[in-house]
Image (cartoon, rainbow, N blue to C red; front, side, top):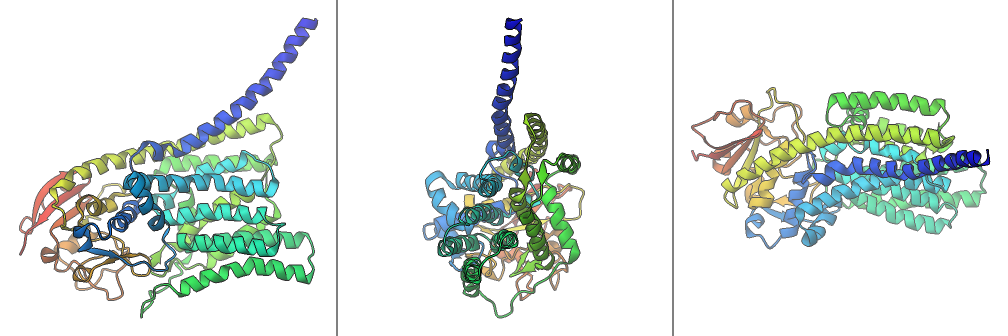
Length: 525
């Protein structure tokens, strides 16, 4: 009897220990699964990523590549969009440009994964597996669009919020000084990162004020520590570049708000997204029903303040698109850190972790399919680059009206001509209010780069007399920069064309039919 009882007791002891040992394994599996598409593929899938990386290459080679220098120069200015410009070029000098770009993407993903844990720990003084749900939202439409500076800024904002909470009992002067430094750093990453940080710490302070009374003197000191650090961001914004005719601001309507909510949930493919959203909705219901997930007052206040910001923020400002569309995913990562998690036991914790690991694997598998397909096309595209002599001028066009499904990153593949062939790319981002890259005067009049899309094939063959309405953003003069493209460009990349023939044999010589692209040499008139 005694021996049997001893064996039963030993088994009961062994089971919890085995469960405790499995917990970190599942956590590690979830984190690795979330990052695997970026780790195993040469290039991340993102619309703007290669365009940003090409600008970093110009910064790195500025003054030492005479072919690039004839097209571009760098003019540093105070713009809230410089994270990748300041970090990647110095890093590229050590490990190479492509490795540095990949490291930058991994860095902001790690910040987005760890930031909610940092906020949760700063509030509760203990770790929890709950904030791991951030891994479910690592792949989203903003990541797909390549808003790398914004995502990096959001990641830093999460840690800045955690630092503010951790220093809550410190002297107001220290909190204000640290917050000022955080605001300045966030400003140079992205202006919306400053807004998200401000909304978060305002909610934290409002909860504290609601919970306890303060003397007028302490209240004044706390308000000064809260508000004054944002003054430098206003001064920096005022000292930035301006134009005589500022670009218009558009609220964007409720369509932009719905797009923002959808962008936080959708990633690459419809059916995995639908399964994931349905499972997340069911999981949220289970967590609330079991009282595992609680929404404290600070989280409610944050949702209220963030909702007001989301309702009033213009979707287009300073010549940039998508402010309202970007905002929800940044707010969501902060909210995850503010939530309170109370698992009643090991069984509930393990059930949560296993379901989370399965959903993260589904999301990452869908991302991996997109990453692998994109990198296949990218390798084929790379094989066409040697056909372009260094120092050429390359125009980018696209056949928009066709049946080829959309695939992120395709339209910025021609940015590789800047990196690999020291050539001019017609779509290299060079908006004077947003970028430090400047197209030199002889080429500026015949170059895009104002966040415009590739030229529709029909408009390339028959240039319109005025910019086409809707979806295309031009500089204030409204010019058709490709109007005389046969004289001003040497090569044309035509993207996403079903018909593999030459659309204009009298003006173009077909050099390569690739995977989702064609390369042509321009015939001089």
